[in-house]
Length: 104
Image (cartoon, rainbow, N blue to C red; front, side, top):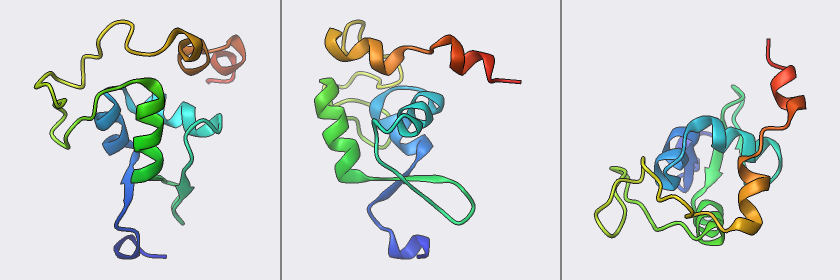
């Protein structure tokens, strides 16, 4: 499948911008199975727009435009403290020692 055949797929960077987080968070969520993705032949992650929108809504995040601003005019790159529901915050933001120890 070529990129032209995948019009609704977003890159890791695009997803990070839409969610107002860094690319490493998006990759971590994908690797943990929290955010569905497909991988290109080159190993790059691609995310379906609908899955990202559902994930964003589950987190209680405002929609962001491609330029990184939210619907209320704020910047998505500086998330509002407490924007993630407490019940999900730990699972999404935790970086267990096992993840850190495996880094070179």
